[in-house]
Length: 471
Image (cartoon, rainbow, N blue to C red):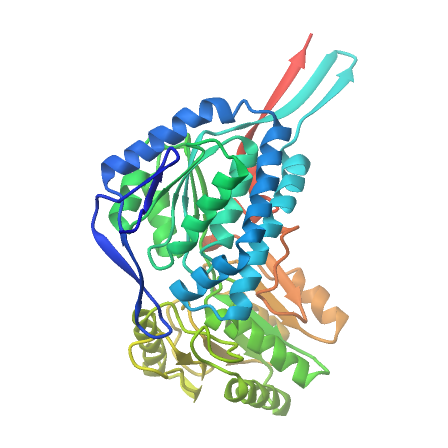
């Protein structure tokens, strides 16, 4: 039986309902778990609370040393981590090992960010000494997503630990197994017991964690869930909320000299990770006329040529969606837009029954009724044809979200004009919308978050500043 609850350094069996991790590559069960019940969640929070008393007072250099050892332990487990990610959520081999590598790299970047954005200093002034330091919040609940089940929660957990917080981590029930490997690495690194606790489960486990005595919630996921969390903590400014909630991301192509290059940027923006990145392009604004037609044709050629299949298939570039349910949701999303008058250019379709394996789709929405402003987490691109740049920008900004956007252009003036007018947190030129740097903030306005960007800026929401004056 799986030991699936980790509290104060001890593994035990969850006392809640049983659930399975289903491989979207072939529909087989790859792991069985028991959710933590409300009492176990309460115990995990109490364990983190007790550990906080000592960990928060541990010297910064000592905390860093533990996290450096954690990086080494992750490095030793890279292949096992990659295999766990692939089995749970279908990420192809090449991409899963890339995610495992990103988990290792996160530690050095987070140490630098902690010093840069949340460090300490002292200055002498005419009125005495002044100093600034940063203090941890306490017990942080971390909710992990399925699409990057190792890298994204790791991106919350590592900065939080560096700042002196302690953690209760609830992995996604769709991709749970990498969390146990992370715990192994923390144990090998010598992280004191209670500093990281793991409770597996779904909605009930998550609700128990929300209702618990926590000081912060660090979340990556859909805006539906994130806004529900925001409502839950209404009137609770004492709880730090860091919410990263996706986007309905636009990509504008205007005055480019490179049709093939534009098609490559579009393909990678819309379809990498089978469209399961919050920064994937969901809406493409192409010029009318022959060049726009040529670019679309080139993108379709790429769809036809790409290797799609199970995570362990030979040379597979696009793996499955996370579940057969996700396929049904994607098909319903496509059908809704057809009903609104959208014209299918190439349909998204189910390739292997009872799996998540799909062929990417494209639909022209130029003359259709306005669709709901929602994000589909899948490989489906909505196209708008518009040659007027101001109108293209208006289409791009016509969303409640604001995470990422891209501009494909050979004209520097077009870039200068658009970058000053697009309302997004991550903006790229002539490269995929999914390209994000760990040395930069990650987040955006609107329903994409609550002004708590992660990545390099995660240090900001993991500690509060304390200003000191000494007479």
